[in-house]
Image (cartoon, rainbow, N blue to C red):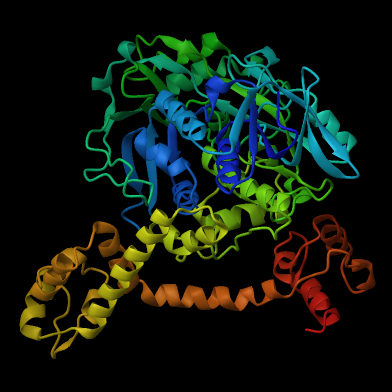
Length: 623
């Protein structure tokens, strides 16, 4: 029924599992993807969208590394927006509204066309562990399947419980059963587990809504895309989203259900996402607000189903319905299904190495919500890294990791394994100290060559990146070396109310002014001729403008990163005995023993470890 042994088994086919399976298989590992329902591969359980603030950067990083999320998002998008465009490029974040059904279908098509990848539909009930090393999995039918490594990406299914008002029942997602057995086995192996909560809004029938009472939310006039590959689609037609608001009347009606709400009656005791609270949490936490935004988002090209972003709730279905009818445009609303909350097991991620391999069991990797994160993008990034490292582990090669100055993915994983989390972890630009370096526009420059060296990114990706890099480098050099006279430049500067120049100077200097754009520069014949003669595309042109305008900030941040990275080079032996350091604080001693940092730099980021503790460590290590 199965080969004697797989190289990698991936448990779960959500966003983490799908990227993990794709990465391992594309690197050449014989891979098996096991899921409880093959019809729901990469299912968008919550909102039908990919990307957003910081999350969009992650999707572009996944794509630059050779993953599938960006490609699928582009080919199933129904609307594109570049968020934060009014701010600096470090904050620009791409986001697409997706066709939910096509998204899952396209993911399955791509996985089925991936060599080295097999599929099996059943519940994994346990692991086969020998001598602290995972050697396979056991299914609910009692089948044992052997492998060199295992990646667990169980999402919200581990002992999942769904709550709607005072009703609750087992489930990992609406209409799907929970997964049992794995948590208990991991606990027996010595792992520390906890419970978390997430929620989702009701889905409604768009034919019952009055969109004329709502505010239109169109996509970008010139939509971009996620994938750096030229072969993916760019939207030419887009669907509208809409915005409406709650009101005091809506809030008062929702409050009627608080008595039976699992959020307030003690039925749910686990922690939910702080930055994506339920509507009842918003009302309770922000009592001074008389209204909250609701975004009304279509679920696809040809469906009438809509997602009510901002109305996540676990209140009883009758309260949800009664309150939503009072929202402008929802007076005659019909439900497809009510919103609900779900509780599930997770495992404290400080129990992992940077490779996402567990410290307790060799060859066992965790990725996604099992690590306490929330969001498709965060899950997909972890899945890709776990899949890469499961492959490398099976080939007895060194792990592949990313530093905090190399990728948001590096920040995400370092935060998780160094600090742990007590609430669903979500990525923000503010979490990255080097966000000027980690822009969405340069993820290919940062990561594609690393992935190509691994054997994951294709030759096409590498050549596309190298061409863009050369074009932008040549264009920047053109601005550094080309002079222009005041007679040509000053009319442009004066039109933009910028100080005129008094003598001939290189183009780089006026172009670096904040209010002078590439559009302004193209009024100079030499600039436009260079673009036309070299057939520069928008990506190379945009990259040039960013590099010119922000060169000072980029250089400064690079220098800061290099200084801090010197501590990354000071490695701490895995068997290091911290009790030898008598001057360490007790809290630092406990945290260092628990986390077992790999470098002094990682040790410095552990909560509870002070600069003085790091000084003690450096002195002991002869630094």
